Amino acid sequence: MSASIFQAELRTGQDVVNTRQRGRHIAQALGFDGQDQVRIATAISEVARLAASEANGHIEFLLEDSPEPSLVVRVLAPNSNHGLVAGSTPDTLRPGPALAPAQRLMDRMALRPGGDGRLLLEMAQRLPHASPSSLVVQSLRQELERNRRDSAADELQRQNEELLRTLEELHARKAEVERLNRELEETNRGVVALYAELEEKAEALRRASDMKTRFISNVSHELRTPISSVLNLSRLMLDRIDGPLNAEQEKQLLFIRKSGEALQELIDDLLDLAKIESGRSEVLCASFSVTELFGALRGMLRPLRVNEGVSLVFDEPPEMPELHTDERKLSQILRNLVSNALKFTHRGEVRVSVAPGPDDTVVFSVSDTGVGIAPEDQERIFEEFVQVEGPHQQGVKGTGLGLPLSRRLAELLGGSLTVESQPGKGSTFHATVSRDYTQRQRAAGEEEGASQTLEADGSHARTVLIIDDDEVARYLLQRLLGDTSLQFREAASGPEGLRLAGEVRPAAILLDMSLPGMDGFEVLEALRREQATRNIPVVIHTSRSLTEQERGQLLPHVVGILSKSGLTRETAFEMVQKALSGPGHRPGGLSRQP
Image (cartoon, rainbow, N blue to C red; front, top):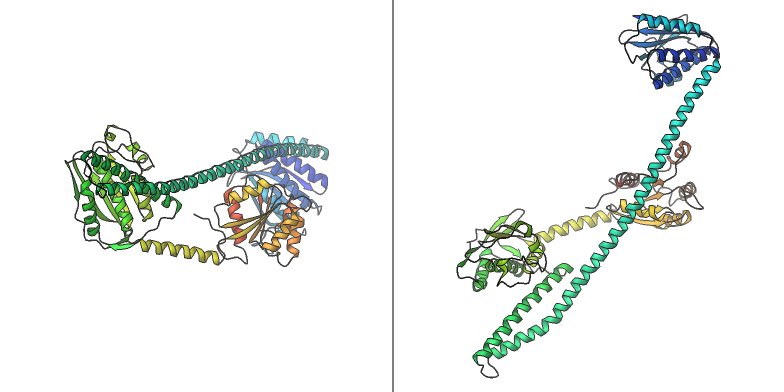
């Protein structure tokens, strides 16, 4: 069911103005908000203008209840106006290109033949509330009749007021965007400064670590010679080569020899640590069985028992394939673990066992019934020169290097060293090593060979040229793309960038538009003129607000446009990946390094 509100002829421009004014008034009376009022008035104005161009149009406003309460506008227009209609038969009849703006503004639009060679165009907009009462509709009809002769100046004034309000909103939004851009620029500068500070501190830590390693190595070598002399001379005297010794002299020489051996052990541990840290420790592989290893350890370690009430037990190893690794380093790990266990176990036992591990590894376990280790100290004991203070340390000597060295050696042999412990209930150390160290080396070599193959076919070591006069912007781009396989070259001006582009032939170029002297448009044009550089993908990286015309000039010749304000790692990565995946590049483009 429908009810007519108002209708009028469309013959002149004044009729179009009046129709827009009435459509706005009707929308307001029916409860549409300000934005919807503008949308409805604009759509009516556009359709009325097309209908009035033939001086033979008619418009009617109606209220419909079904299928849902709606404001309906019916316009009767001649069929001779090109662009109004698409389709040649009643079944294919639909709004043409000229009606596209109005169609986007309304909920529904339909066309059908209207008789006398004319078309009936129907537009509808759902009511925001329930249908008004008949009294409200009657009052609206009377008011529209009274205002039938309003002038065009009134409508133009209303349109100007709407435009002014819209401009004020746009200015406010622009000011907010500029404020956010300033905040982002300040944040970016802070991030760049933080990265620089972190790199400086990391470099200082690397230098300190290198200095420590060199110091330990040099001092240990200098100490080893005099210590060896002390041990050899004490051995000569204890062998009584130069004459007999009385009991007191022999006791003193034994003390000297024992102190020298302890000092030599400390120096050996320090040298082993220094070699591992500097990457100069060699793994000398040999084949041997677990039974042979346990047999040799059993003979070496039994004399180390401090307390008579402690038994040292080696579990019979299960049937296992031979090990192929460095027997001396593995033996050193187990000696350190058993020695520590015997020191801190007053009664009970120290048990050494072995079992197969995951991924072709072997797990050696050394468990004891000693004092145990508190949870907060279970990682500290693997730090160099750290000894846990407590009553159990009384009478027990050590350097604090045995466990750190054992963990480094286990990692060197392709495994790890972990501990499980509870205070008062003992500890269990698990040393995991690769069963066949050479297989681990071959796997690492295959991975390295694959990496070199990828690098050789061009998927790594790609060069990206950054042309930007802002040093901070160049630095930030490199940091954002720092975990990729790219190499970077920099140019601070257009001429320098063109020279490098010709010499280096980069895989992609990141180009700023606001360059001194020669701006980005001129650089891009020069790149496209040269045969050697015309096919290099270019990504625009700029802080300028580009107009639609400028974007239209750029986009046929560039891969994309990155805005400096709000630039993130993801957007930079995606855009450079797009550049490197284009024509002339291997599919897959850019890859992140682990």
